[in-house]
Length: 306
Image 1 (tube, rainbow, N blue to C red):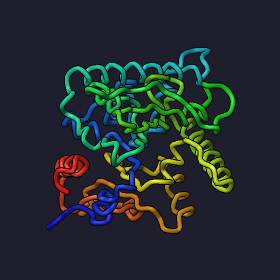
Image 2 (image 1 turned 135 degrees about the horizontal axis):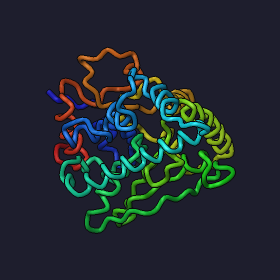
Image 3 (image 1 turned 90 degrees about the horizontal axis):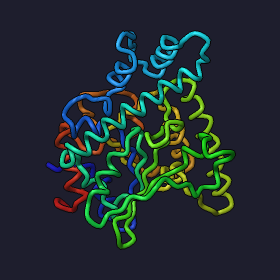
Image 4 (image 1 turned 30 degrees about the vertical axis):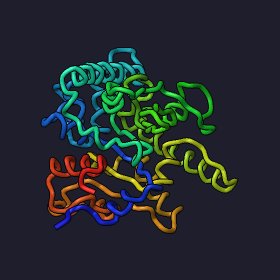
């Protein structure tokens, strides 16, 4: 019995269709076979504050850590900056380790530029791009922003959230990588606490309005939001918690804007999880463990089982 979603498989065979991937921390958990600061909020926050009692509401937990780490006469904003700089260093150290020791661990076959146009990474690291860059004939570009959305300085969140890098595979085959929650190459882009998460939603609302204005004028603008609207979506290694307000706002706005409702597929063990959030997404596979799903998806994108 074929356990692959038939709608996904049909779209995969269509030469005119390309997917947008939403990539989460499960990408690291699958490759490294353990929880690390790349795949676990709990482990990352424990490194920042080993004594802090974590509740599982990690954006609120980070706010508690800010309070506990604040020193005399220091503004909370400065405390947050110090902690974010620490996060940047921790992630960068782990990233370097992975690039040295785990090159063959990751399912890089999912990044087929003939089938994928964009990746929206919810992770702070650049491991997928940097691993692909190690391949012969592949070139990773610098972060650029060719959107008309952002206003103000290049340190503003509206600028940082609409930057992207491009992995060039040659023969005009490219994949854009977006980091709307931030990336270690710029500590000011990293979003952790509840205060910054509220800014995410406000920016995403403005981004949606920006997109609708361009749509009415029959124009396009290059942002992660546009790429989410235009393509069928694959959610890989991400559960999308209720606090991922920007992603939920974008996906529900997408459903409102598209009468035909371009499908959103999610990699999940759906038979044992009745989470109401899953009602928004099509299961990518049924009856398969995560390890099997990553392996099967890589084969499908490499056209080995079509």
